[in-house]
Image (cartoon, rainbow, N blue to C red; front, side, top):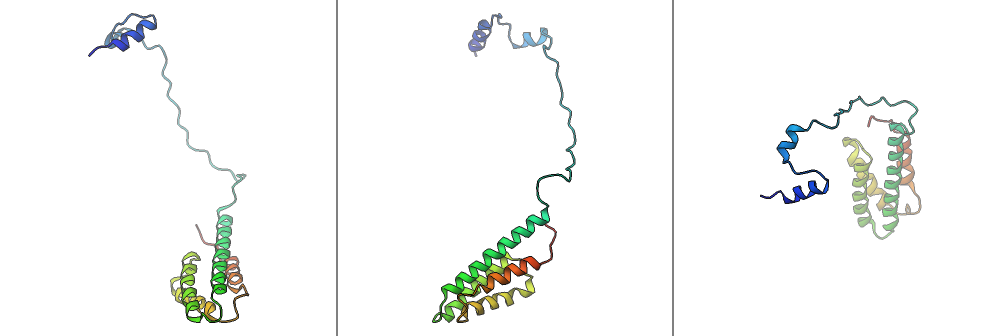
Length: 147
């Protein structure tokens, strides 16, 4: 193997080629080596600009409840008077989505799904946003949990 590129680079720098081993054996290190000091992270102060975690969780829960209520009310608006069986089916599917997003306890899930199916199957509830109002009220009165 030829060291032609290496030799040419050294000649361009004005130094004769001495080879790698010879250069390392005779030249003292030109720079002092500094090692960085590793410090532990600083403790966060109470004056940080981020909102508390509980407030973020509460807002997220409120917006999820608002969206879930609007979806259920939209499904109710879609299922008009002659669509009672289809309304019950669509309400059950929407209720299943709601119990998944709203962290409903396992023992209450079937009742929520049945109530959603009944709400979408009932006539004359299309123009009242009862699901949205109920879910937002529940989100506002629900006890906060640890994230």
